[in-house]
Structures are given as structure tokens and as C-alpha cells.
Image 1 (cartoon, rainbow, N blue to C red):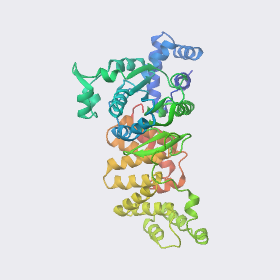
Image 2: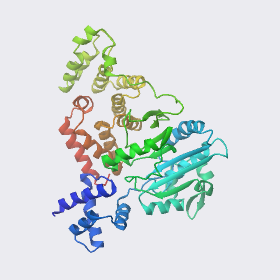
Image 3: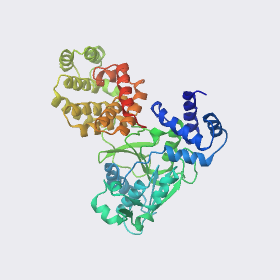
Image 4: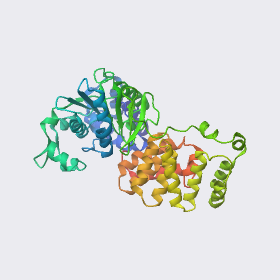
Length: 466
């Protein structure tokens, strides 16, 4: 086989054996790994691939997992999610579990254990009284990181986002770092598991109150992702909670789950159980928008299409004048969105921000409103808040390429090449299917091809595995 054909075959086998997916820009890394592993066994690359394909090769699979795993993590990573867990999700689950007096949590792809211990500490803080049981399971496919997790020793850098009071209460100085106190260690157990494979005991229906599975789905094949989401949903108790990472989203209405938003964090609740406070305003359907005014007026009003065409021609002032002109009946949400885009294009950022905030307040599930607000805030130098809005847009619509692209570009600007590569790779995949109207509204004057070229150029410049 030629070298490119060998890499293609290697990718196919890794998908089959591990359930992991690798992008085109991983080719150099995979070529080096294939070379090293074949040499380790004294085989040609073709012979190594043939052996990997024929029958289960457990020691080699373990070696591949150890080489390919991304293990970077730290305690209380993404504090807003732990705030939502502590203040909203776990108190609700404690009320639901009052008769059993137990809280069970699962950390999927737990790496070296920081997340699992963070869950245990949070559960210990929230439990109603000392008689309650808090149980956390951490699972990962990599035995090296699990050994570190069981040791429960971490550097100061791993505790960089840990509140001082939490560090003082639940960690003890030890050998230049910190060790988790025994009281918390007893609440956590670790097991080696490749989540691409079924495990009836781990995924027993209805057993978990909370599952954390953050920044994993993007590395799995679509079939494995779908199967894992089904298992996690079924394994949650009715009313249980699923927390995903910023790079993963199931959209605003996944099967069996309800989207929630508290403490500046999106997460999911399994349907059933006690009725929680509902998320924001329900999404408004296009049908509901179009029937809100006189049918005759809406039938003949093509103002939106005319203004959109002027935007495509970059005649921003003319388009804004048309979009802002009075017309019969209430404005549809898309008309107001276009108005906001045009206000931003002509430099009236304060007005654009105000309009975008009204749109997102009225319907917190509208990804386009969050995308517009992100673009306006970024132009106004409120980059941190803009990133939050792009994350919301991408979370609410996993097929929305443009917020992923902006997140990748901003990550590169901040020196985070690994994070940038992850977002840009996702954006590149989605751009081919991006809605034409969205490209007109949010593409900054670039068409689909130009955006694709720009995205690929940014991705190549990262030079890292996403």
C-alpha cells in the first residue's frame, strides 16, 4: 500500500477498534504512530495493519489508547457547570432521592480523575445530611491516566480553578503538590472502560443522577456517538442531568432530554421526575411568526427578501433603510434579526447590541440571535462575552458552522492552537451544509467557498491534533 492508503486504512481500523475518529490534519500524527508501532513489533506497516485487522490484539489496543488519548484536564474545569450542578441540578436530585438518600454520578472519559473528584466534592457539599451516600464512578479507556486518578495526587496547576476554600478543605499538601483527602477518595471508584463498547453494569437503566461527558463526543465516530448518547440517556434516572462540554451539543430538543440553562451554562435533563423550572421562552415556530399579523399583508410583503438581496450586494445603507421602514403587522423575528445585522454593518453597534439582546431575551433558544450578539460584542471589544454567545449559538444548533469558525479564530488569537483546531475542524465539516441565508447574514461578506478556504487556512496554521 502507498503511504496515504496506509494512513486511510489505519484511520478505518482505529474507528472500528476504538470507535474514535480522526481528521485529515491528523495524518502526520497517525503516520508517526503507525511507523513507531510497526517498528515496535518488527513488522512492516502493511503487516501491522493486517494484524490489527484480523483479531483482537488487546496489548496493542492498550498501547494505541495510551498514545492517542488527550488527557489534559484540571479540577473544577468550567466552573459555571459546577455552579449549575451545585446550585440547581443536585439540590433537585436530592429532593427527588429523599427516600433513597443517595446521589450517584458518572464521569465519562474521566482522564486522571480531576473531574470525578470535583463531582464527589460537589456532591459532598450538597448532600442534605451525613447519612446520605454520594457515589461517583470515573471511567476511561487509558490505564495510565487511571493509575494517576487512583493516586489522587495533583500539582498546583491542576488546582488552578479550584476555589481556595475548597482546596483547603478537601486537599492536603503532599510532596510539592496536593492529595485529595481520604473522605473524598472513598466516594470515588475508577474503572477502565471504552465507552464505544456496551457494558450492562455501567449503563444500567435509571441509575445515575448526573453524568458528565465533556469534550468527548467530537472524537467519536457518528455511530458510537449516537449509541453512547442513547446509553447515557437511558442510564439517567428520570429527572437526571447530563453535562456535555462546550465542543459537544445535542441541540435544543434531543430525544428524551430537555435543554436547561442556568448559571450561564447549558446542560440536559432527562424527561420525567419532578417538574423543574422550565428554560426561558419556548421557541417560536416560523408558522407562529407568520400568522401573527394580517395574512394579506404578510402574503405580499417581500421586504425581507429585498433587504437580504441588498445585503448580498453590500448596499448596507439601502438595505437598512428598507428594513427599518414601517410596514403593516408585527415584525417577524427574522426581520428583526436582519435589521440587527444591518445596524452592525453600518457601524451602529450600540443599537445592534440592544436589538440582539432583546431577541435573545425573548427567545433564549434562538441560535441566530446569540450569533448576532456575539458578532456585535466582538466588534465592540467585549471578546469574552462574545465567546460565550458563540458557544450558546453552537450549543443550540450543532449544525451551525459559523459560531464554530469564530470560536476557532478567537482561540488562535489567544494562543490556544489545540482548542482552535477542534473548533475549526468542526466548522470545516459543517460549512458544506451551512444554510445560504446564514452565510449571507453572518459570513462577513464571504461566500461559502471563501469561508471554507479561510477556515482551512486557519486550521492548517494550528499545526496540532484537535
